[in-house]
Image (cartoon, rainbow, N blue to C red; front, top):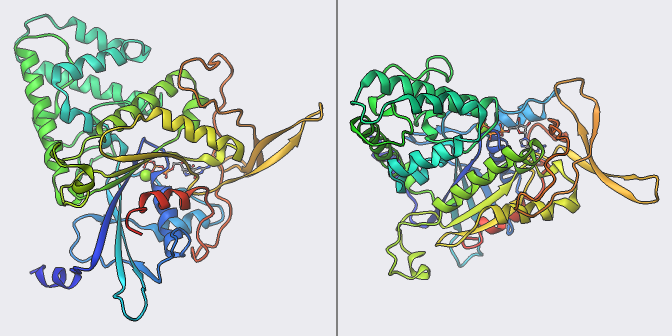
Length: 448
Ligand SMILES: Nc1nc2c(ncn2[C@@H]2O[C@H](COP(=O)(O)OP(=O)(O)OP(=O)(O)O)[C@@H](O)[C@H]2O)c(=O)[nH]1
Ligand SMILES: [Mg+2]
């Protein structure tokens, strides 16, 4: 039955580019996508600008549509509201037409964007990691974290050669998930695996908004890292392998398999302000993602130039983005970009580049004279929630170096939550931003 509508939507002359917008929790993915949609529809982001642009018909799509207009008008309201936390994937599709004169056919481009939870992104490395290696990596990461002590002691208490006991697996899995939730929510850490323990697989509806796993969750979801051998370890390893197979199967569904570009957002500035543990965590998460995006499903013997022309799948371009770059002044954004670039070592077949972007600009730079004849730059904006006063925020200097040589013993500040710079609720003039145009020039360099 859906064949007819689908056929009507088939356009052999149209190029489709599918971009996943992902990143760590609270990195700004939904705001980013809202700003991208609004600015594209307002003709602000692309050079050359398309002659026509509209939302693509939803047809018989299986993924929920991303509601950019509702998000944009909430952000423009008085008082403004930021998007709610995202708990499943959604798709935004735009059709663009570029006229090329009377003798040449129009060029048509469909841009599809997926709001892809970052928790799932951190499952990509598991596809290439054995249970034993994964367990060891997780235990090493947990070792210095005080909140992990109880869980590590529990693991230690399991005797060597333990039988494949279901009750123990369920208990351990409950403890491990509670720890992951605590580290994510209370300690704001991101490098937490498996990601689907925190953000359930696509399509899962949680009864109480996200704390208890659904009753029909498959048994393979009950495992945890365990670094010893024996029948109990074999049970956990079999479950881990089944989990990895499920992730692989999900990634090969058409909605995900055709992703060919990716934007990975991280609120690096918030991590820098939060101190050494948070910064190390974001660094590890970004490096892990960068590492797992290196590969493409290309047989190694085919040169990249030719592979790019073949429908082989895999990610071709990755933009690693420091989000909320309006939390520092203009002069610091270069350093921020440089820092992200160093955090995401590249190589392999995907082309990657670092950016510093504020998708929804909230602040302006202000130069403040210092008593000694010098001046310093602060950013100022309207602070939300509390009493909506204008607030100046001194963001300090961004050191682009990676090493732990920065002075971590200073007092850290929480970055304030600002309100968006006011914009027209219809979105007709776009959403004020920093750096989106430059980012799109890179993302679509080969198709525009
Ligand atoms: N200053 C500034 N703040 C931003 C910007 N984008 C997002 N924020 C802030 O970051 C918060 C999180 O943004 P979201 O877009 O909801 O982040 P997300 O990555 O979709 O979050 P989850 O769906 O919970 O993972 C917002 O509520 C804003 O306070 C920006 O460009 N500039
Ligand atoms: Mg979101």
